[in-house]
Amino acid sequence: MTAPATRRQPKPLVLLRPVPGDSVIHRLWAGSKLAIVAGIGVLLTFYPGWVPIGAVAALVLTAAWLARIPRGVLPTIPGWLWVLLLLGGVTATFAGGDPIIAVGSVDVGLGGLLNFLRITALSIVLLGLGVMVSWTTNVAEIAPAVATLGRPLRLLRIPVDEWAVALTLALRAFPMLIDEFRVLYAARRLRPKVRPPSRRGRHRRWWLEAIDLLAAAIIVALRRADEMGDAITARGGAGQISAMPSRPKRIDWVAFSIVAVVCGAALALELTVAGTSG
Image 1 (cartoon, rainbow, N blue to C red):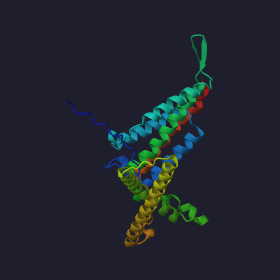
Image 2: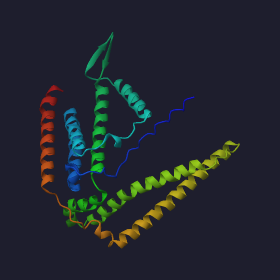
Image 3: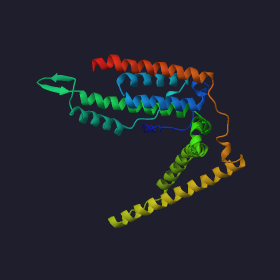
Image 4: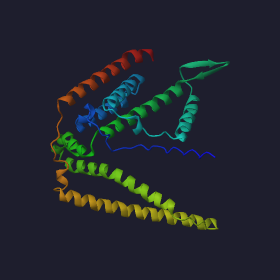
C-alpha cells in the first residue's frame, strides 16, 4: 500500500526581509529606490497606458535579474484569486466598447475587458515595485533615507526625523508581529475543541475565543514593544536610527538616468504612437 502524497504547502508572500546577496540593486541607496518608486507611481497615475506599464514591467524584471532574486521567494497564488480574476474579466466584458469582434452573429465589445486587464497589469507592476524594494533593501536603511529626502520639509517645522523613526520601527515590528500571530493561531488550533450543543453557545464560544486571541495579540505586541524600546535605549536612543549618514552615490545617479530614459521614452511613445492609434 503506497503512502498518501503529502500536500504541498503554499508559500506566503514574504515582505520587509531582504533577499541575501550583493548585487547592483542591493547596493543602491534606499532613498534612490524610494524616489524611483514614487516617480514611477506618479507616471503610472497620470499615464496608465500599456506602453508605460510594459516599460515599468521591463524595469522590474531587469532589476530582479540583476538582484538575482530566486524563484523560490515568489508566493503561491491561491486558486480563489484566479476565480476572482476570471469573474472580473467576464463581468468587465459586458461593459462593451471598442474594439468590437464578431462571434457568430453576435458583436462582442472588448473595451471593458481590455481596461480590466490593463488595471490588473498596473496593479501587478506596482506590487512588483514594492516587492523589489522590500527584497533588496535593509529596513535599517529606510529611516536615514527618509530623513535625507525630507530635509527640505524641516524648513516648515515638520518633524521629519520623528516620522522616519516611526516608519522604521513600524517596518521592523511588522514581520515580528506576523510571526507571533502565526504562533498564536497555531496554538489556538491545537487547543481541544468542545462543540456546544446550542447555536447560541457556539456563537458565544466563538466570541470568547476571538477576545482571547485579541488579548493575547495585544500582550505579545506590548512585550515586543518593550523589548524593542530596551534595545533602542541601549544603542543610544531613537535619534540614532535616523542619524546614520545616508547619501546617494555614483551608481544611484546612473540608476536615475536609466529609469528617466526608459520612462521618458515610454511616455513619448504613449503620447505619440499609442495616442494616435487610440
